[in-house]
Length: 67
Image (cartoon, rainbow, N blue to C red; front, side, top):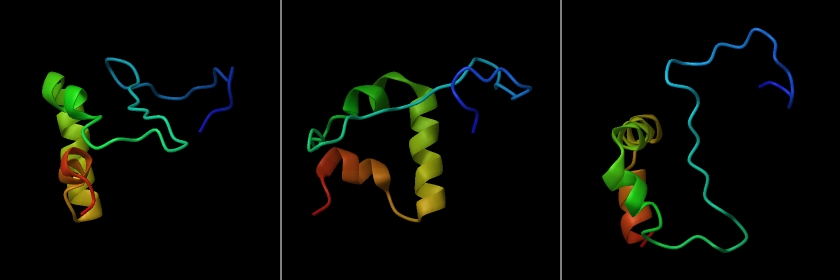
């Protein structure tokens, strides 16, 4: 991870960097990622990869809640 302002030889993927950031401090809500999941194939790939790595469906939890 680079420090802010560090322009060393870090490799940036084609198309630039992407981050999906959701606020904390109790502001999360079931369904808050629906818009990003329905509008972008990159977001879809991130959630699909998350399912592979974590071994459970993180998208389902985001859409329906943990119960």
